[in-house]
Amino acid sequence: MEKLMQFNYLYYKLSQRLSTFKDWPFLEDCNCTPQKMAEAGFVYQPCESQPDVAVCFFCFKELEGWEPNDNPWEEHQKHSRSCRFLTNLPSWETLTLEQLIKLENERMNNLIRKVDSQHTAEFEAKVQEVRIKLQNL
Image (cartoon, rainbow, N blue to C red; front, side, top):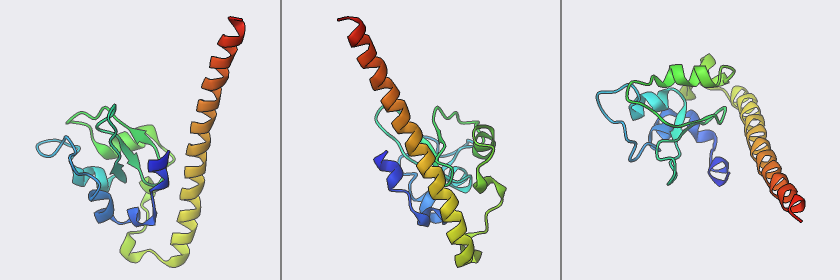
C-alpha cells in the first residue's frame, strides 16, 4: 500500500512513467517494452515475489505475469475496461488546470477504492484466522 501512496500527479507525464521502468525484464523484440508500457499508463512497481508488476497510475490496476507478446494497451483494456486513462486523456502539455483537478479527483477516488479493497481483504483474512482459532478451542 505504501507504494500506492507514492503515486502522484506527475505520472500524467509519459516521461515520469517511463522513468520507473528501470530493470524491466522486457526491453527489445517484444510488445511490452518500457515505452509501450508507459504509453499504456503503467508504472513499474516490482517487488521480490512479483518482479514484473506494473500498475496503472490512474485506475491502480496491478498486472503481473507479463509475456513478451503481451500488448500493454490490450491487457489494460481487458483488465480495467472503465479506466479513464484508456479514453484519451488530454496530454500533459494540453491539460488545463480545471481538467487536472477533475481528473485528480477521479484518480484519488480510484486510490481510495483500491486501498479500501486491500484493507477489507486483510480484515477478512484476519477474521478467518481468528474464527479458526476459536473453533479449535
